[in-house]
Length: 367
Image 1 (cartoon, rainbow, N blue to C red):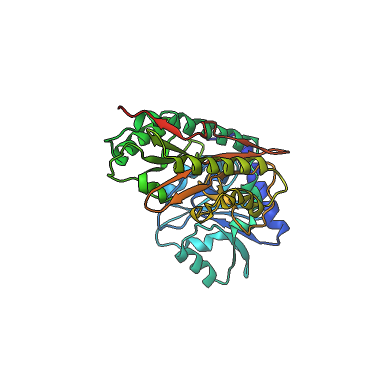
Image 2 (cartoon, helix red, strand yellow):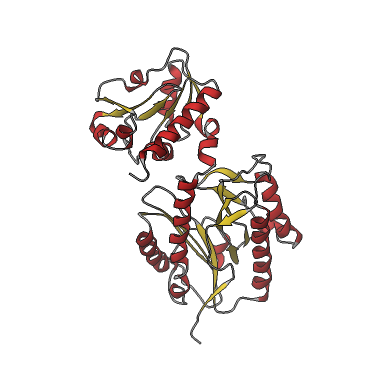
């Protein structure tokens, strides 16, 4: 169990309160981040229907009989959540105990076949992501502690990256070593990006058999999951040898933009306005066309969740929210760079959870 039982009962109580305030009959939440957050469960029942049902007055979980023991022996049982098993051949939707004509909040991760089956029974549905956004977006002290631990874990890996980068190695070889290092600090690896030279201009490049060369700028974006279910995510940019004048100048702009974002991140600013602060620095320096994505995303028991730091988003940021600030400059076919920190909003600003240098770190190249 990742946290004491009262942590989970408090979360369930908050969900029940939000449902009551919004006039909804229930939440029907399926495996994934929702069950990890509310029941400390990573259960995966594949095509078999599983759902936690929370109402303003009750809570139970419908689960295949073959998986019921794991929930009964975990947080669900300890928190007084009824475990209602079903066997193959039974109708699990009949066990949801929803009133006729109910309107419910459903997980964004609910599969289409289950969602359509609910709707075919006359159940009205709303996206639980928007209904329950308060409980997920604003982190409590326990969650902030886990995200801080995750930040330390991924920082420990980034500190070792310069020693992995040298001409003649492939991106794949570097990624394999990074995978081992991430697993030493986390329980799972979420992703490994090693984008060297022109591959660095693709923000979501993974890794390839490209051979690193002297002068390459290398984007390394890595993340993993802790045993508590909380995620890390951090990007740093490295160079093999000496960067060109163009690369140095562009990287200085990028570093200034990321610093401006951290300075502006505080309660009361909107997500869209924060994106604008970062984007203006890059635009004003003439690199705007090369910054091709949003400034950031929330993080917690999901690697990407609300709030999204994106133009036009009027979400008012609040104390306790955790999200990335990760501007990038990507010159197609040539090179790219990105700096990413996870930050948590405090009463009057933010605290970065990643502490490795923002400099363009040079890996030593034998001459």
